[in-house]
Image (cartoon, rainbow, N blue to C red; front, side, top):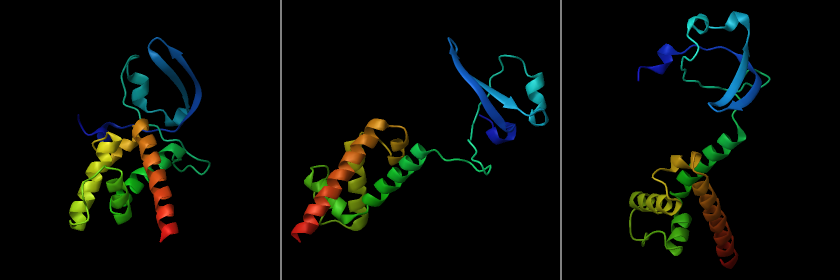
Length: 156
């Protein structure tokens, strides 16, 4: 596909209604007359478009949805946990990885990453963005780890 940015037209619009038909969801947007790209007037009805929408807040700044913030934090957390020695110990005790104690940090991290991906049923941690089952399994694993850590520190 050609560079999408070169073909992009942009404008601000307001959602006025939404409905469904056999063809799909129908989204109606109101565009200020001064903002309508001229090509919209001349393109045929039925022309196809690639669309990207960004919701703006009251200060005309992009509004990042809560769900996106949460999944971004989860992906970052998964990355950090894979470098955590205690997490490696925890998932070893859960049977998700083989012995990790006698290998260097880099190999241990790779082993933990592999074990985590395998447990979650994903190829990449970025799949947490779109895989609700993997997110739920990760949350449970994270909660188990936190409980295990609390118990471990209580006995120390």
